[in-house]
Length: 320
Image (cartoon, helix red, strand yellow):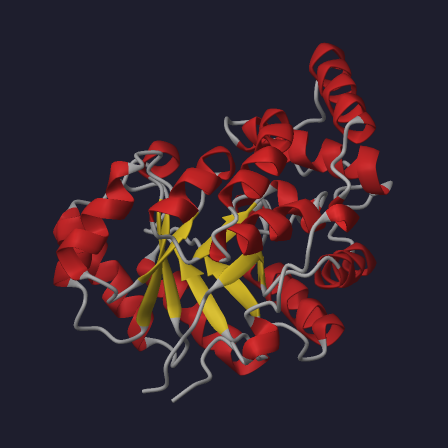
């Protein structure tokens, strides 16, 4: 079994939609290039921010293939498995490997609130469906199923479980997992406005949201922490925090897509049942982003941030 490495900044990419709410593959490809140019270390497609719940399996595979083609091997592309049944998750995992994905981010089965035995069985069954390394996504706040540190200890015998996306919003979880299982898993922070704290506590990666509009700032925070330059990272993080708060709440997709539209000129269209934001919320976010752009940190003044994990040889699924 090869070593898997998920260090670095891994955007959970949005899925661009046309005016009639169809997947915009040209927009997908443009997003991939924008993020790679911004210095990210890999990209995760069709996650919660990517409106996975509204996408068909065929659409997810089409998006994955477009992302892989645009990346051209520069960074690994991973697919999210967030299906209603274990069987559907297995089928999509197998298809993702065939399509060329280099890793999976796997959620508990949707809709049904599984108990710990059922949750572990789901993850193990999906793991058997492919040879790909897996990020186990824990987000009890959004999905109602909690993968506890004790459960991760019990699942540690499955080598495909390489990393944990920890999104419980409880910072104590990072230390509790490390105390219980050591470095068995790479722990990745999945809550934007807890990212700096989580990285300082020992997370080795950041599955980020607002990175889709501000990749350079996100990457700078991560690399500064890795170099122990906490004060410099904190200054950028404090500037970023009002925007990072937009990653929280049921309308985080609409809000982050609007931020992208303001900063990058992309489409803010979402797929029903989501609707575009009401005028008051949109005006608030436009004001927030406008203020952030006026006070945006000058990253050119930073000393070298050093090489990215990808530049030092990191590849998902590659290693001794």
